[in-house]
Image 1 (cartoon, rainbow, N blue to C red):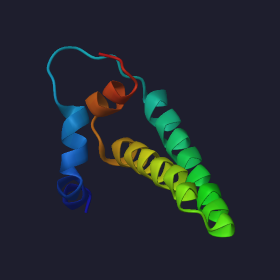
Image 2 (image 1 turned 90 degrees about the horizontal axis):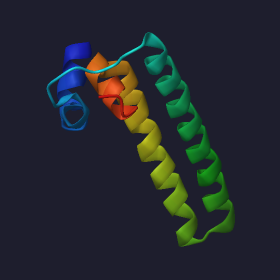
Image 3 (image 1 turned 180 degrees about the vertical axis):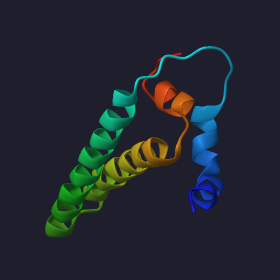
Length: 92
């Protein structure tokens, strides 16, 4: 199942898994990335509620931004390699 999901999300994962050389990775990076992704997804739900309540088109922009950021964080944290998790934190 994980290999099928990795194949489906390979366009996103390839961005973060590319590169050579050493990188610095700690298991806590993955845990923190999961938490940050969950917070972004929570913010997207709050933004969606506000967008529906106000009925304004501009209120959908934060929802979309937070949803994409949360989804990328969760995809990299759950399916990405150690290099991808390290690269998303900027540790090369």
